[in-house]
Length: 250
Image 1 (cartoon, rainbow, N blue to C red):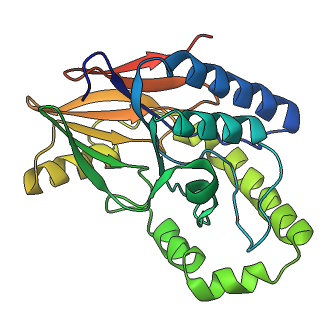
Image 2 (image 1 turned 60 degrees about the horizontal axis):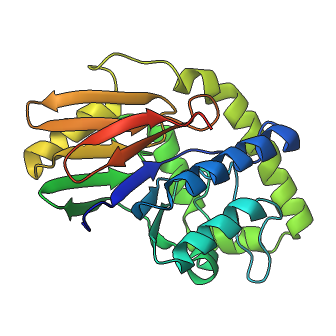
């Protein structure tokens, strides 16, 4: 890392819900946060579910969210290395973010070294022994044939249907996602412990749970969940030695 620079992590904006007004307010808050860190950011990791639904047709993308996209492009063009992890609500990201916004796309676990610290990073969906229904659904949604079939729907119909079902799903699970299950029942904590036994890391960083959490999984490693930008407006800041959870008040 460059002296005086920091690495930032955040996740789960779910832009598009519950309505246009609240989504726009949240988008503007994210943009203000990005503006507030651009002076010392060396890298920014966005850990998925930036949108409540995203699908790229060959020549069409969902309308809206241009303020966030413009800010990401601006920071990328300024030399800040920007990363995006595909989440369960934006599984159908293709190459638009990479080609137009300069984001580096990650679809699986990422292990990196920053200074003397080792990181394990992922959105967090489909990890651990449970959630078998979602794991089966993800296999369908990521299947090229089913994506090809969906692409034949007119965007007005395809995106409209997807927004309807995505919003209904979010309404059902939003409160459940925000409840701490206890360390023994938090599947991402258990997953991090198992991964540590295979290949140690100092920090295991995830999104997905919508709950800001910082849990020591042993004396040498910490599990961090980034929370969300629906209720918590939290992010993590790494200064080369310490990774700290913070809340953006701006």
